[in-house]
Length: 410
Image (cartoon, rainbow, N blue to C red; front, side, top):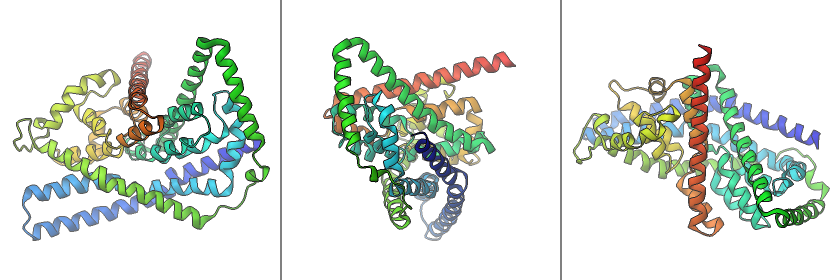
């Protein structure tokens, strides 16, 4: 078991390095240059066609800036999907399920839960759909509880943006640390929940847990040994799977993110009285952001732009980056999103912002998937409230403790 876990750890580190340290950033840089070229071409075309300034601003500063800022991360996400597909076709995932079966029993789970949890790193929606197929309702509920703590691919653009703006050469460690923090916090809270339930319900709960453990053990014994044999990954199938998943992600960009970018542009260019404005500080988006910004002041980022970005992130986590990009482009003079962030945040508050984005309520699509999987609105609302409260408390603790340590050391 130790050798299996060591092999999986090596595969995971290699995948992280390829995704965030070498191939992924290289392909994303190429994609970014292509988007810049295409946007400039569209700008010249609209000018030549005599397009009205307002429509041209919507197309270039609203849609192209918002969608393009997220689209540039598609190659990195495709590399991540490719690595996950290689794990599955090579038998590493089957080996992982068998190796994790015994320790996961302590949490009321089995090795079968490993696949839905790993899918959560790609997208929470298919992960929750996969969790619906688990044999017991208890495993299904606990797995769905864990999935939002895992960093889906939609959060990767924000991590990369914050890491590049504040942490320079250490951005690889920051992104890896965020992924690891979500995993550890999720399992720690699940372990705490299991212990509290055990103390509350006493022998009946422990007897039920023993029954589940016995059932899981029988399932584990029935797993054929051949399923855990390693083989060479099916590279054509991995490429096809990466293309399928990336296409679905791009479909999301050209629907939800495009709509969100357009709405954000409109909110930014209209006042609460529905009159046009060129000053973002007078816009409806600023009014909404200022209303909710005090809630985030104890977390270190009470700026209305950060609050507005988190609000639009409820539609899709990619919309956080597109919102920041649209707001930065509307500055006088226009700025890159990273430059605006360095003026809004410090490295510590940027880390707090990243932690809150990691943990707070998933997107609307995930909320709908949870509602369907658990069979009602009440458990979905409970998940919404729980995730947001955990995110607020974790980010608040990080900011307050970090500020105290910095003051103490200075």
